[in-house]
Image 1 (cartoon, rainbow, N blue to C red):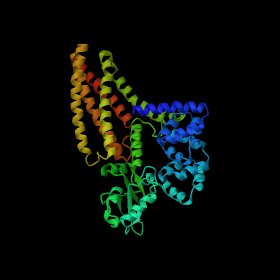
Image 2: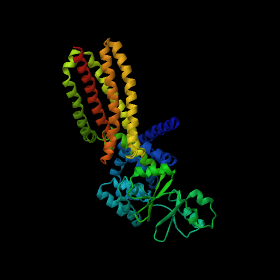
Image 3: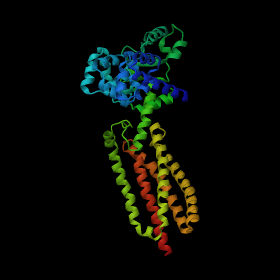
Image 4: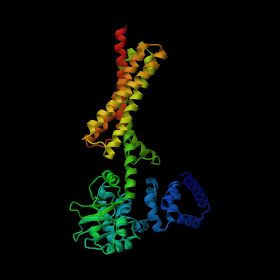
Length: 452
């Protein structure tokens, strides 16, 4: 990885020098030697005008491989500048799933012009793909695939693979009947090792499932993981073969879904990034910060209610953030585990009770362990045994409550058919802060009344 990064920096420095000297032929030669993903990385590190200029130097075939690898910000800048004619030529060379993604990003007028500028058959295929929701199996599938009739031989299937090998990566050959109904899939390895004149239908791997177009892409990713798939057929409700999803699509899905969960936990919009225009980022983030402000005011109200207690024992104020922070951390640890479990299908409503009880045990034990330690520290530091007892009990209560809330918030959101990650961190932090102060100051008030 270090060597790869050093190579990238070397190419970037070289590229900057050639841009300054207008040595376009040297740039073209460099691009001819690099993988499309490496070219995309180089372009992503350039200024807007340099990105547009260098992308224009790519041949159409190379450009069709580079554009899906670009960052969202770079692709948006290039698409705004490129002509409809040039973009149509690039789209014509792309895999249908990548082409549909690019067209979906275009303004309606430009998308229509590009679709009119490509081959009619490909245009029809893309229009069909664009009808599916982008986060479903239909939205990530590609229409290019290799299929043979159910009465074909292995030799027929091999010939079909050879004919298609220049246009696509082949992982499976799909067998269909006369109505294009999926019969099954033959893995490439099994195809190669079977006898040439044996029926193709006999080589079908019955463990390879199919998926309908409306299935969520997260569920599709779980199927790839569960069955160790490289390719998965996509069918309609009548089991007619429509397309396929390949492993490279699923890698993108997993990255997208993990990023989306992280963003949503923090209350960020999924399309937000460090290169967005400031005003755009402000519009996306400010509503969540307002919500955070409102929830934080709950802590202020709690503290204000116990103002007299704080005035009597000033030392209490120094330990208040400790109780709130530890409860929040315990809650967020549990929150991340539950959100991840829900995303991967490990946590369901059927086993949620078991997960809930286990996290409660964790919360109680962690609370006791932390409460004893912080209680002893408070006693040794301030020389007040009662402060150690109060702090220890408050820590036990708030760590337990934090774990409880970290479990209940995502499960409740899931039950309401909302994204379990949606702003969960804000709710957990707000609740543990407020309850931490309430438990600590409430116990302090009770003990002070007993002692005075």
